[in-house]
Length: 214
Image (spheres, rainbow, N blue to C red):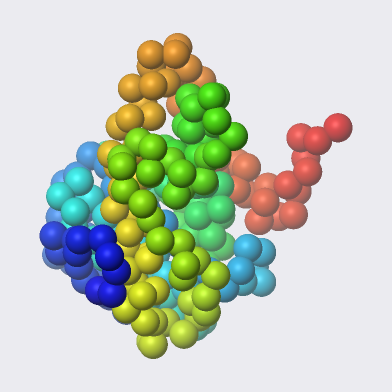
């Protein structure tokens, strides 16, 4: 993997779905970090291209979603498993993308962006790069963020490294945010916010994203 950060303990790329072995290994974890890459930001128009997952043992995988693909049974089983918390940064987008692209209803959810906005009220910087830098001490390279993810069979090493690193540091950031939210008396509020994310994601998918505005 072409990147300045150290390589993951294990790294794999799958076409279309997780294999049985990685699915079972991930199902034994209490929490997983998850991210997605798509052709754009409009659900239904811009297709889901990549799903990346990392666990607490730094085992990272990228799942390439094929053109016209509408399901991934092993991935669905994992992301809908009630025993495994799924940690995202800006879960609202990823949850909607997974529902729109693969019919997956993700649950339960922790969103580090929501957690950051509720806990890190001393800063306006809640992007992943700033969050990971402050809480984990790792500087992420976001250079490949806006690139052609649709060429799933020809993704570059730089793209795969970017995708992998975007999930590798979410779990330690999540732990720091939970401690901060508990300290500030906002943990219960955060959990209730996380529970609303699937509804908000559905509103976004149906173009009702202004429902709660005046």
